[in-house]
Picture 1 (tube, protein in one colour):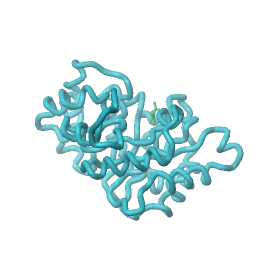
Picture 2: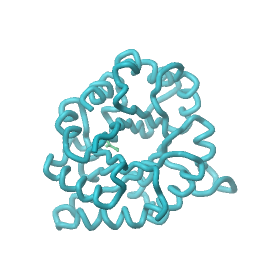
Picture 3: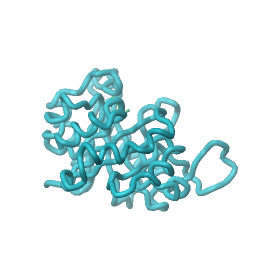
Length: 239
Ligand code: PEP
C-alpha cells in the first residue's frame, strides 16, 4: 500500500527563538508545491512551538511536541499537558522516545500519555526499538512486540509508529536494509495497514534514499540531520 510518507525532525533540546524562521526556510528550499506527496513535521522544544506556529505562515510544515503529560492539568511542576501543546500549535506528539524510556518511562506511562494525546486530538508518534544487547541476544522482535503491546491503547486508530533501534540513535550506525525490512514487516503485522511506520536512527541525506525505499518504511524520524533545513530537505526529497 502506498501512503503519504512522513518526514519528522526531532529537535530534542536544541534551538532558540531565532529558529522560529526554520519552517519558512525549509519551504524556500523545498516549496509546498514540490512536496505534495509527503508530510513534513518539526518537533521543537515545547517553548518554541508557539513562535514556530506564529511564523509558519503559508508553509504547511506540521508541528509536534516531544512528549506530553498524561493529565489534563494539576500540580505537576514542570510538565505540560497535551491540551497545552495543542493550544501552542502542536498537531503531533512524539511519545516513548528511547531517551525518555532510558530515563524511566515505562510502557504503561507511554500508554497513558498516548491516551491523553488522543483526547487532545494530537496524533501520537510512538517510538519502539531494541538495544544492541537485546538485538545481539536475538530479542529484537520480542522487545518491540512487548513495547507495542504495552504502549498502544486497544482502541487506537490514528497514530504513527517510529522504529528506532536504540544503538542507531545519534551514533552514525544505521540498521542494515534487511534488518529494517524485517522489523518493519513485523511491526506492520501488529498495526493497521494504514498506520505509518517510520524508521529512525542516524538517517541522513546519504542514506535516506535506500532507507525510505524499503518496504513498509513510510517515513523517517530524524534527530541530528533534522536541525539543518538543507539536510532535512535533502531527506524529504528522497521520500
Ligand atoms: C532520534 O533521536 O530519534 C534520532 C533518530 O536521532 P539521530 O537521527 O540523530 O540518530
